[in-house]
Length: 189
Length: 189
Image 1: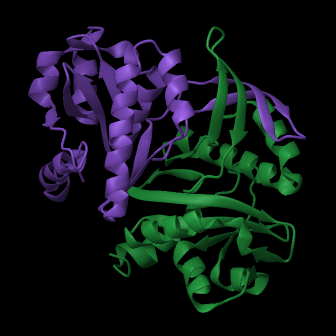
Image 2: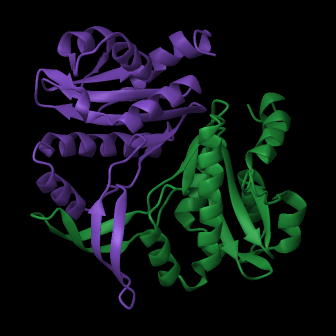
């Protein structure tokens, strides 16, 4: 476990709809720890950015601080020599509201895609998990004026991941297929 | 600027010897912002990990929290398709005390090196700046029982970076040379 329970509790209470978000974060922590144990990949969740206002220096204690919005994606690291970055998103609706991705994050996804990094969203929708690659996410944005991505698009363009008790959410299994098709065979190079 | 001034102040006061550390962090923020502006590289400082103990939910305000030690390096991102990760370290001595790098960080440096990522320490020593590549750092650890790296080793194995008013600390200029010699010519592949 990378995060103490108190953060989990905090986050859940502050974001009303984040209960399932935390479950997904928890699953991904297990998955990533598993990858590290097996020396398969080194992918970590970045700490939540916090703006510090007041510190008690004698006690080295932060007494006033606030959560901030990240402008990059939450998870990044290295896999098979590739740069990899993604964010975990949960929707309770049967579509994916784009308000879940900040404009900074969209710009960042575009940058990483252009630099040939492996970038994607891991979306939990209708109790299913999908990897939606940055390219397909950007394609949607560039060709639609909608404020949400329909489930059908995610199901069609995304890659479903099944939860597995021992492996967690083994998203690298999907990434292996992407690398083989798009990276090693030179579609992206 | 990626970080509000209050964090800068906080950090400086908490760590007695961190004044210059913050100066280095400040220089690197300028450098990295400059890379992003020029679409040269996307390298960010990770937020400082903080353990949250008490939150006022009504105000979404953190009322008790403490700084935590990171187990990865502070900066990571993508450059020319390569995964890149480094940490900025400052010493006021004329050697580099190894206590500045946690055992988790050392293990992490080894992992990233084995995965063919570009990993290094950016060390400020005697008012000079050096890139010490992960390989040379690990070589020292594996062949010495000393608790510090002498200046002569850093000067010999490291690559000096000169501060430049418009570019900041242009460490990618050094990394370009490393990539050409060690990566593209297949020494590391």
